[in-house]
Length: 459
Image (cartoon, rainbow, N blue to C red; front, side):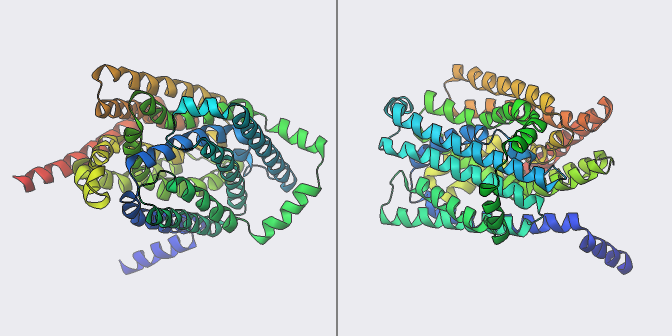
């Protein structure tokens, strides 16, 4: 028995894939734990409207960001040739710079009109944080892809940790200096991005940046851009729609309800997405590199992907089930009584986040299998489902009912995405149905078990 355990530990220790996941999860986890621990302080310094304002600005940034690099950032890890990789980085930097300038000019000309349409409760000059955040976020994407290619997962984790710590600390400092202001969280986000970038920019990258600026060959850049043209043609629209899906509830709530409801939703969404940021995105970063290597070696990815999916499912279902039962109480105790309604929203959305947290890391298979066109059509259908779900809720005139319809729509979207991912790997329809049914039964069993315990304790 002891020999078996020792053998297993040695195997885990020698596995580069598992070690890279552990490093990334640990680093990301520390960052998000710090962020989570500081959130109760921030929630008592800022009203829901401040979170609502930040969410509206951030939602605009997220949608524009997808266009800023033409999605070539997703191709950075793929080329075997270092020459092609560097040309892709040049394309991304040029596209990002042009996008930033265009957004700035648009705001300069139409800033007041946009300000009146969005109805922000602050000075219109805060709109100019949008191009700054787009540039910072785009640069982070480029550097992140670069470091994934170099297997520098420790550097990525360290940058996320200090980025979150710097941003949250800044928001707290401003909140103490001027309690219940509306822009402190936004300023904290800007500072956090600067910390993030400063820790991503390693010396070896800085030396390469000098090469990127001074060695520009238009013909070679054009050749590489054409070779990876499927990314702007098919992956870009698909990923833009994916980003839009995540922002639709913010646009919907800001139009049909008010900034306070946007803030309540944003707080719930921000805390629910922590497992995805810690675990899902960490695993996805490492899994992407591993999947590319396996694909290049012409080996099967199906079993490895299925094992990863169910391991994630078993890990995340229990905490989300606890949140489903005790969401209001947890939010009220940790964040303050003004956030109790946000806890109810978190409870409603918990099941959809279970599915999302497991589906997104394995969805990178479409990039490995070069199924950008199919992924695009999937995203079109997804947007239609989410929009239909939200507008179907309007007849109830209830914020919470809108959140329920939104959650049901997302569960359908992500279950469909899981099925599509396994179809890319060559799984039969029967195998896909078994995987989806097994996932649903696992979630229902765990949720039912937690509910039963709560019922027995209460009675």
